[in-house]
Each structure stands twice: as structure tokens, then as C-alpha cells.
Length: 168
Length: 424
Ligand SMILES: Cc1cc2nc3c(=O)[nH]c(=O)nc-3n(C[C@H](O)[C@H](O)[C@H](O)COP(=O)(O)O)c2cc1C
Ligand code: SF4
Ligand code: FES
Image (tube, rainbow over the protein chains, first blue to last red):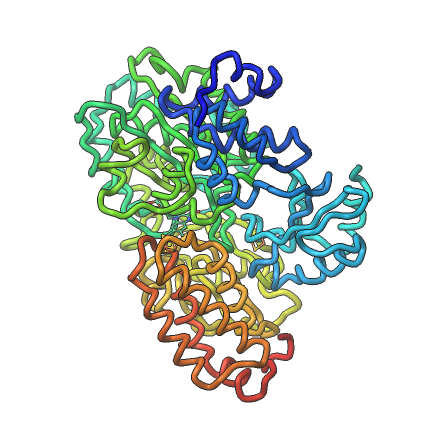
């Protein structure tokens, strides 16, 4: 591992991103900067259109004084980190039991047909991608999906159409 | 009696604001504890008296857990809240975070005072953005009002509280995986012992409790442990939040006394959708063994009643299934989940959950063999109790429950290569 000098570290990210990551670092004991790794990865992922490149992970490693491999381990362990490009709108549909028994399969079918893609794929214009997810803790609103930071509950194909309409 | 404790602000407008919480008496008991310098032991005693048992699923007595911390040992100690809420069917902590975040904050400060910790973290699952923002806003308000930070209300007691955001991993709800995750690592459970009370976050003594457990503390301290215990029944103190979903008219979160008949809860939730017949209930999150509908209609929502029927109250997540559901398909989906979410550290869980899923999958798709039923039992048996954490048991228990009560549906799938109910 190469040692990163203070000057290099300050050039890793834009000042805005650095400030955001520093807010996470400040929450933890000084000797536990690596506690900020999940927060930092989320921030850089968002600034990169929703996915992580190896270069970004390496930069996070350097910024937090972590071996790059430790950052890769985290990035591959947690399902919200994406290692391949995703759509501008990442549509995450829950198919776990409460959603399944409330016909999440019809929502999935509708989305697949409408967008012409399956789980793990991105539309050609880069506008949407589809992802199957486990219970999102909103089973009272089954069937449900998440797009970006927003939950959408009690879905029907018509409601899905209206939601997608409103997204860039 | 409903919504008396964790949801006590729910009927107010914008119930998450500090002034709303205070209009219901919020933060008064913290003021009292700090100004009267209540003995920490007395707080732990009161929590013990309340009969509060951990609301995260395991039901461990909260007061007893707190008493394991050596309060006077030197060095930092931590209070950690588990808002990872990932057990399928569970959606109650989300409502505490969204609608009554201050009560959780007050509970965590009191917990810190009781065990001698000056720092706490609330681990919120990464998908919960709206709840996270509400909680962050509440932290700001609490700091501004002097209920958090240094020298709280001039008492000399400090308590810092921060949020840690998860990033999508059910296993991080397991307490030691959660601690690893805060430490910036993969969320892989630790071997126990040592338990978190001795070796927890950053190697320091730590208590870790569920959101609902901690949010119950202020009312226990305000009204007394006995008051809380009396709301419930023997061995199940207090009210509890039940998140009820499935094939019902009015799914949602209901805070009702422990011991309430299931039939009443179902009625509150609007009864069965389209007037269909109740077939089965998963009473405590997807790892709780299934209970046939008729039997469930006779049970009460408390630890002993549900345990007596061979299942568990768990997190209070009640999934109600009507007679259109194929139980093989339901189990297939659950087995897929546990296989997906196994952290892969121990062989019985990593391999066994894959076996379970593949066997149920082939039965579901008409490829099942007669030996598969015994094989399922055998694999579940080889996982249960033989793993580092309880995810292994969580994967095995639903299999055992399904075979106990719905073996005939599995048999039908094997014999006829198709579903009895006609949906799978
Ligand atoms: C696989 C697994 C997942 C868990 N998920 C959660 C969870 O999402 N929320 C939670 O509070 N407890 C969860 N638990 C239980 C915790 O390990 C722990 O018992 C609990 O947070 C302790 O708090 P309590 O005593 O207040 O319930 C989980 C346990 C296991 C084995
Ligand atoms: S039981 Fe499963 S989830 Fe738990 S530590 Fe072992 S492999 Fe990981
Ligand atoms: S099962 Fe879909 S949100 Fe819980």
C-alpha cells in the first residue's frame, strides 16, 4: 500500500464531497475513521450516477486510511452498493412474502414489459434499471417498491405508470 | 387501550416534532432523573420490574441485559440501537422513527445514564431514508433544547448520539454483525462469548437494544415498571407494536396490550380481504414457524401463548395468509431469502440454506422426489443450533413449521407435480 500524503488526500474529492464525508468521520472515535466507509461509499456512489468504480473505491480507501481490499469487501457485501452502471432511476421491487401474497409478481411483470428489461438490467436510454430486493420494512403497503430514496406503496400497474411518468 | 407507549404522539399533527413530544410529557422524566440524580441501579431495577423483553425478536429481558454492564469499569461504554428492521413482515420501528423519534432519543439518553455510557449510535437500515431524515431532524432539535450533548440540562452528564446508516444486509440486524458494520467492516456475526456487554462496539462494553425496546423506556420511568407490566400479562410485560400484513383489509402497525387475542388484532386490521378464509399465520416475522389459521384464532398475542403453539412472538410481525396461498411457494420464497442473506461464514448455514432452497424449489416446480420431505427435515435439523448466529435457526424453523402443519401440500406437489391450491 502506498502512503497518501495530506496534500494528495485533499485532492481526492471535491470540497463538497470531502465535507460530507468528514461529517461521517466526525461521528466516530478519531482512531476509527473506517467507520465512515459506508457513509463515504454512499456519497461517492451518488455523485457518480449511482454506482461505484474501482477508482472511487480506491479513493475512499486512501481518504480513510484503509487498505483498498477492505473497502472492496464492504462494497461487495452490502446490496445497496452497485458495482455496475444503473439507471438514473433505480427501481427496487420487493418480492418477499407479504408483497408476494399481494401480487408483487404482477408489478414486476408490468415493469418488465413496460421497460423491456429484466432484473439487473438498464434501459437503453439509461433512464431506468430494475432490481429485485428483499423485504424493505413496508409490508403494510404491499406491494411496494423503492426508487431512489422514495418508497412507493400499495402499487397497481396504473399507479406504477403514473410514478414512472413523473421521473426524468 | 392502544398506542399508549411508543406511539403516544401518533394522534397529533406532525407528531415527530419536539414540541409535540413535549406536549405529551416527553423529556420530563429525563429532566427528573437528571435533577434528582436518580441512582442508575434504581433505573435498571425499574426496567426489570416492567417485564420489558427485547422487542427485536429474541425477547431477552432488557433490565437484565443492562445489569450485565460493569458501570464503574473505566473507559468508554456504548448504547447501540438496532433500527435495522429487516425480518420479513416487520415494519414497526420505521413508524417509531418516523412518528415518535424523540421518545427513542430520550430512551437512549436514559439508557446511557443507567449504564454509564456517554455515547450512542442508532443503526438505521440504509433503505429507510425518510425515517433517517426524521431521526436526524429530531437529533438536531434535541441538541438545541439541551437534551443531548455535553452537560445535559446542567447535570454534568454528557451523551452524544449519532446515526449510522446501513447499506442493505439483513444479517446486520444480528447484534454482533451490526457492531462489525459500525466498525466499517462486512457485517459478519462474531462468535459469542464474549457478549457485547463485555466486548462490544470498538471492544468496549455495549448494550444493544431494539428501537421499540429503547423507546419504551421513558414511559416505564415516568409511570413505573409495575404500570407497564400490568398492561400486559405474565411473562409479557407492557403493550407491544404488532405489524400485521398479508391478505387483510387494513394492514398496519397496532400498539396493543400483550395478551390481546389474535382475533381482536385481526379485526382491528380490518379482517380478511374479500372475505376469504384464513389459512395460516406467521406470527413473529418470517423465521417464526407457521400456525394454522383456526389454531391461531384461539391464541393470544404474548410470548407464552405463541410459544405454546410451537412458534414464537419474535418481532411482532404478523403475516396473515388466506386460502389462495400455496404453502410450498411461500416456503420457497422464505428459503430463498435466508439463502441470499446468509453471510457465508459457517458451513451448515452457507451450504444448508442453499440445500433448503433448492429442495423446496424443485418440489414447487414439480421436480420433487418422495425422499425430499425427509431430506428437508434432515437438513433443517443439521443447521439448527449448529451455527455462529441465529440466522441458521431462522432458516430452519420455517421449514420445520411448514412440514409439521402443511406436509400434505408438499406431498401433493410431489405426487401430482402441481399445486393443490392452483396458484403455484
Ligand atoms: C439474522 C438476525 C437478524 C436480526 N435482525 C434484527 C433486526 O432487524 N432488528 C432487531 O432489533 N433485532 C434483530 N435481531 C436480534 C438482535 O440480534 C438482538 O437480539 C436485538 O437487537 C437485541 O435487542 P432487544 O433485546 O431489545 O430485542 C436479529 C437477529 C438475527 C439472528
Ligand atoms: S449462521 Fe449464517 S449468517 Fe450467521 S454467521 Fe453463520 S453463515 Fe453467517
Ligand atoms: S415483504 Fe415487501 S416490504 Fe416487507
